[in-house]
Each structure stands twice: as C-alpha cells, then as structure tokens.
Image 1 (cartoon, rainbow, N blue to C red):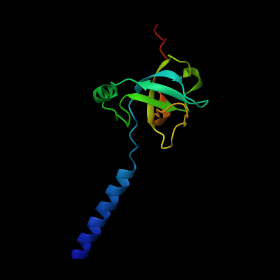
Image 2 (image 1 turned 120 degrees about the vertical axis):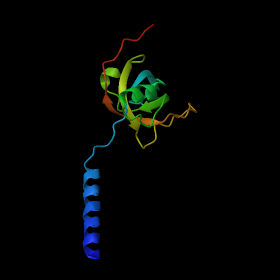
Image 3 (image 1 turned 90 degrees about the vertical axis):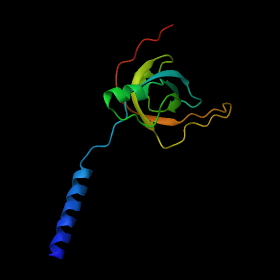
Image 4 (image 1 turned 60 degrees about the vertical axis):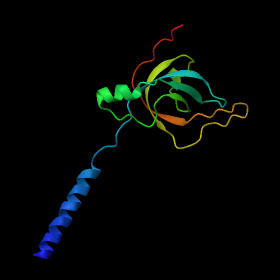
Length: 126
C-alpha cells in the first residue's frame, strides 16, 4: 500500500513537471523609446525610454520586463529607426553583454537587445 502511494505521488510530480515546461516564456511589454544619438561606436544607438512602461503593462496584463525608463544603448536597432528623434515602440531586454566603451564619455548605459518592434515610428515633433 505504501509503495502504491509513493508511485502515485511520483507520477503526479512528473505530470506537474511536464505540464509546467510546456508554457512559453513571458514577453516584455512594449516600451516607447526615442532615438537620442549614435553611441561612440558605429552601429550602437542611445535610446531614451519613456517612464510609463509599468503603467501600460499593468493595464494590459503584460510582463513589465527589466527596464523601467532612463537611457539604454543597443546595437540591433532596425535600420528604418536609426534616425535621431525617431520614436518607436519596442520590446527590450538586457543583452547580458557590455555596451561600447567610450574613452571620452564617462557615462555607460545598460546594453539591451531589441526583441520586437511593436508599432510604426512616429514623426519627430519640433
């Protein structure tokens, strides 16, 4: 009887483990970003993130992500959004590697990678 109970518990644990692995990973919420400037190395761009990502994600029920406003730098910004002043809605996550090292600039921004583009760029307002 004790062996039957142990086997049942083992199968229940394996079933829970199998069902838990089938879920997809959460995707960060869309964040509106403005291209501020090109960073010190070619191909790297500094983005200014809007600070309302938590509010927007809370309303939609999406995963907020690792970033909540401020400045970041990226090297995989799509070509059509590489103009200074362009605004775009992006899904971003920390890239896990360092950004460019600028000798004349003492400020280093977190390096991110663009996961997805959520919308079309807005025209820059002057």
